[in-house]
Length: 293
Length: 226
Image (cartoon, rainbow over all chains, first blue to last red; front, side):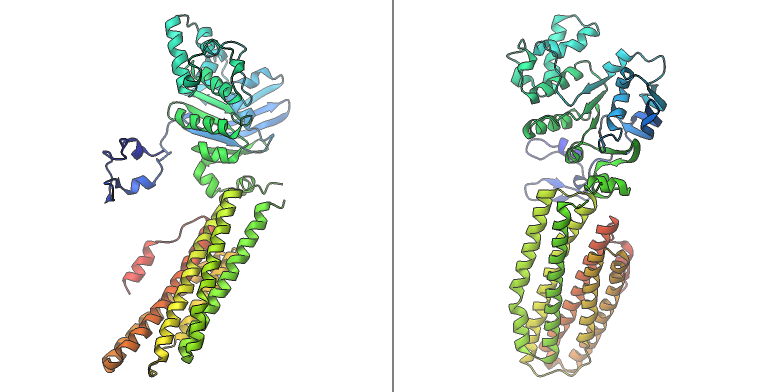
């Protein structure tokens, strides 16, 4: 995550202007900034949750959650089963609309737009907010058609342009090299890890602002999990990523910010490194250290 | 809910306490050897150091094991990191005890110098600091840890006092320069023990409160003005 590292060329040298610099063997200038993470404060908040609640009938699945999700960072939402984390995630692209007797209270906005205002076009919203699920769910179509699906339903018909979008999206999802020679093959023939990366390619093909990921790696083996995590790190900076995960080490590895939910309430929200080294709330501490019971 | 990691942590705490006890004894023996001009006890202290080194290696390996296998976070993580650092400090105190024992060996071969240097008291304060810092670790008691930090001022003051006394003694009997320098070193070693105990206490404060209290400006100012 080093901004300093980006300024370097492949030899590790570069025009990194540093205060308090010291000369080290190999002529790599190392300064105090190299030891610090980039500041997360000052990022523009993209998704604003204000006293936001989601009810299933009379039961609150999410209760009074207020926090800001900044743009182009990775925000992890953690908590035990039934804590409301998936409900919250699904509220961001109004997936909960499909559930009868589900209603919301309070405010949830994206880029200044109230997500639950009657003016919101849900189809357009889902173009802005892509989603990746726990189980890879490619369509029983060709690899190409899977990725081209979104652009097509949003009116894209230019073949050349579609091919470009498919290639770009598959490259962004780190799948291109593995499938470029068999784009016409059925997507269901891919491995689980490849299918999940295909789903990510499908999600980013419509150029969303936000990528929601609900346990995107929990059905994958460690190697495929690592690839998905690397991919998340690569997509960070381009998309605002919100990831729900049961795997706390994964949350710690991939996210910049972490929100901890318990029994529907947001207990703590902060920088991931702070949450995992010195959480402010006892409940957070108990959960992440496995003391829950 | 009982967790696997809890057992490992309890074990680590016992180990670091055991190391602390052995180091304390080593320090006690080194200062006794100096006071009683007892080369046998001094040698015994020096010979005991490899056992301390081995304990330090064992504690470190166990910490690495817990880090790798349990991937602790939050309080657990801070505890393991604190133990790793405290482990280093204790081993260092063991080395200081050896240094003192070596001075004791040398001084036992020379005629006794009659100057009022109360190493026993200084060592007592340093040992008390060490013990309290370890009690603070095990009892997770930040107040006790803060107390240790304050006690360091006393050890520093005694060290400065000894410096003055030894300086005066060197003027009066320059022919005893060598012995006097050895005595000055003992004072410095004990002062270092106090510093190590303070480090331990600071690590305990970090472990409990998650706040790094080292390198506080007012502390440097206090030292600079001395």
